[in-house]
Image: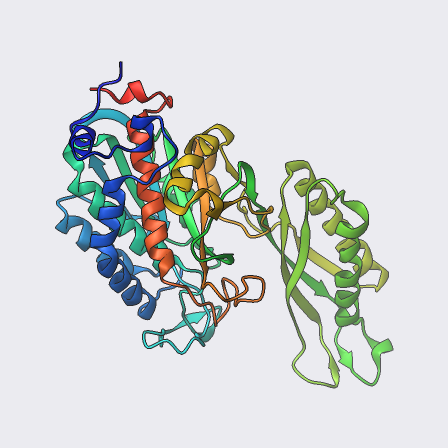
Length: 448
């Protein structure tokens, strides 16, 4: 017979018990609802402060300092400076049990905000040699604030917790500046899981294509692998009125872009799994009547299958080399030009096990399965190390169509702040249920 924790016994005396203690339909834990109510104002205030003061990847000094300061105020001993500005803290429960890691990303984007919010960002920074606005256009301000709220709640019930929780505030999820290192790969390289290997890990992301009040999760592949490529097409400069006197890299580059579209449409079996090849930048020339020496281009590749990923790399190099040669030009094609993010994969067994926890806080009808997402996440590196579940929290207000709402990374991305409450309750419920059930999923495993 399973022995109940002191916390559950107290709740039982009050006439309510969490779902796994009653063997009833999923129900939100009373302590989760109570924590969310008491922390709501604090979480909103944190989010607005972070939103008004965003920082680019590998530049998150203020954000990291604020996070560490609050964790210390809770009596925790955070480690700082991990992968430059990462912050990690461990909450040790008063009872034996499994280990769980929770992750929030803390960096912002080089986007000039256009929301008109009273706490809209007015920050600017240098990015790729240009002055740009900085905005939390992807919602990492919400993630950071939610995890701070979860930390508050877990510390308050620490004596009753069976197990340990690692809080991971990760920098540079959006990608490190050229020539730098950072993000999830560097946190792991610096020994994040060396002395604390989680039995499971959870992460969340506010998402514009999901309605506020809903959660979205799917087992297996969720978000695509992402890889960046760069190309320099080299010709020979000449007067624009005399193209025959040189080699036109602009024409060659245009042909490469056009021919590359057939890689996905004609050479990749997208009926099985989707793939994308996108050119995002083209730069060449300084004057209207001069054919330049060279054109530089860059773009992204998104895939779900390692073999497809490698095949697209080879096909893109092949197209670039031979199309350039057909124009008499040369090309330096770096495909990929750095290590990209692998596919974000949710552990199927863990996701199935925690699905009732998500339904308990959002309602069964408000937990949906999204399609495969071509966006990418370096959380995928964590998910390769330990069983993991990553889920989306609806960010678009009710009454607004998520299909047409400004998307993540838009200067008009607008978070419905009810996502803060739902995200906190979901992460807290998942964490408590997992700890109480034990790493094997058996409720008896958590008995002292």
